[in-house]
Length: 224
Image (cartoon, rainbow, N blue to C red; front, side, top):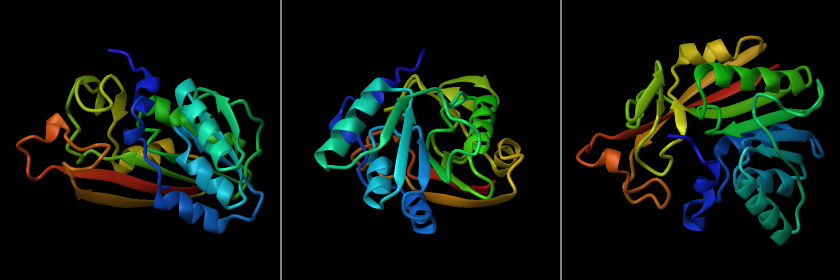
């Protein structure tokens, strides 16, 4: 089963609008007009937040539909950002080009090797000392183990909103492996009970009959 990234943006009700706290934290650390890349920018919620904070925002994504929605949203709010269609392991930027980068629930949409390649690309384009904050899914998440396992802890899901999309479920050892080469690293767990009424991820068939279903992510902060 192959992933069609455009499918993630077909239902407007299922598109998140509020920025992740990691992105808000990064905005507070950077000067105005700093250049920041949102790797896997999706429908644009973090590009909007960056632009509203007078950050020079760049968004890369593999989905033309996500980029179209981002462009429409930015135009509607009279904001601007640089948008490009790109693989996360081959970014069209030179070395030391950015003051920071973010990536929310994107790096886990690949094998472990693919995630490492993407992090290496981010390190290449960041200036010395620049931060890279990202969020990835953890192995204690209730979705871990469902679907076709294509390598240890990497599954192509058969159910849920992201059916057909690969997910690697990380632990701290994996994170340290893909973050090799960065000067500083901070890893913090984020977990919560699964909410069946969540407008985006609720009604997941994998959570049926599992009152202990839990969502786990890792907040990772790196500095080059």
